[in-house]
Amino acid sequence: MDWVRRHNQLYNKGERTYDLKMNRFGDMLHNEFVNTMNGYRRNSMNRTYEASRFVAPDSDVTLPDSVDWRAKGAVTPVKDQGQCGSCWAFSATGSLEGQHFRKTGQLVTLSVQNLVDCSQPYGNLGCNGGLMDRSFRYIKDNGGIDTEEAYPYTAKDDFCTFNKSGIGAEDTGFVDIESGNEDALKAAVATVGPVSVSMDASTTLFEFYNSGIYNDPRCSSIYLDHAVLVVGYGTENGQDFWLVKNSWVEAHTVSSRFLVLLRF
Image (cartoon, rainbow, N blue to C red; front, top):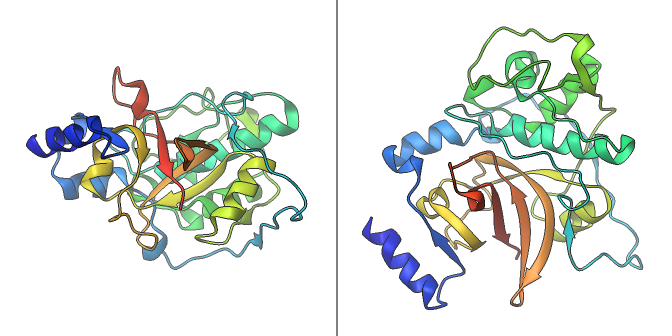
């Protein structure tokens, strides 16, 4: 595509902070891509669960300049959601995997399919979208969530086959970070662990992102349609960024597995 080539020419000149690459989404219409891959459904769901608000550490607590929970062993390998709008479930399991690691020292891959199939009574819609807080509430009330080994991912809606003998982790509750408060998010990532977040992934630039610090002025802070997991932060060439685990895996392209997003 000519516009991808032109963008990358600007990137090579230092006029853009990230490059693009044609990928499997190039065979999809853009609205098909958005409707299929972006399953965060905050604005279309009425059922809500109130959570406590995250309280940042005292101002005299110095946060590290950079954090990468992958290096600490708290992040499982990236998985591919396939043609299923289950990003919310990948985000939720990733967050709980990190907390389970911090508590037990064991990194366990949890079942995304367990959430896809079993959390509909809490307002989630399987491959048609969902929310992380509904997932955490389901896991708490359910007494836990199965491991990926016990309940493998199939990238499609199915009957719930949860089995308590396969439980890999539990949760006792969750807290919310104030929307748009990046200082609070930084504090949470530094002191608590990987954090589930949502973002606008509806732009064509994001669709074909390859590497570098993603920065698109058209990216909305209000229209949020994709759930991901913040696993760290840092600074590169004077630009602060978030290190983000996604659930889209492009074959043979390591850079598509983790995103680097500009902090504002």
